[in-house]
Length: 298
Image (cartoon, rainbow, N blue to C red; front, top):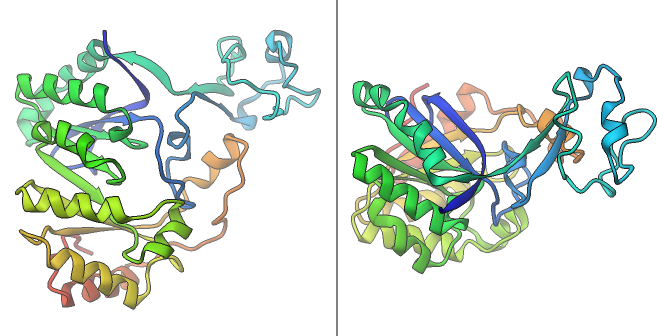
């Protein structure tokens, strides 16, 4: 049975495509965006999340940890921790959890099928997100095929950083691509995400040329990609694509800060303010001036 590494399945999602949707989150991503709001999705391996405020100091975790990774103050030494998960089932207060698990396709489909009535009533479906689903192409292709057999609408939320051969294998099963664009300038993209955007731009161009339904999503990160010059570059690129796909702007928010702490990681953007409504309207105006249709309403 085909399996995939999944870190969450979220029911009744309203922001991952049209209608009411089930969002299936794949673990692992080739990008390392400093602003990532799902930092638990970046690694391809299971990770231990610790919620210190929930801890009742029962010390059960200390007793079962064979790596001696939990100190006297019940802190976790990330250098010693193997994310084996032994401490999770003995934690009575749910202060410890293991994020990321191998799931069989039939188990994932059971959860998807249980919400079919909501899809049918709302025009919704399933969104495969992450992380990056294209990093697990075998499981993704099988899941898309299973949804297609059931007549369930599918959306793929992707950063687009994958070999075209991978996208070509799965694209026939995707009804809607939610395609992230961060920056047009390659060097700035490398600095912000750790990788070139050559594949990202080329793959989007190919999907557009083949007539796929695409919504481009641009996360707005203050100081990183909200300058007029950079947005005009993105706007000109999108406007010139066949079909001129519409754009959604996603405003940066700080909700991920606590997640980084629970993973034992420093948050590079601590204290960065979210763009306000007026700022988002202004940025939408820049893109509209490039001939791009902006879907957001403020």
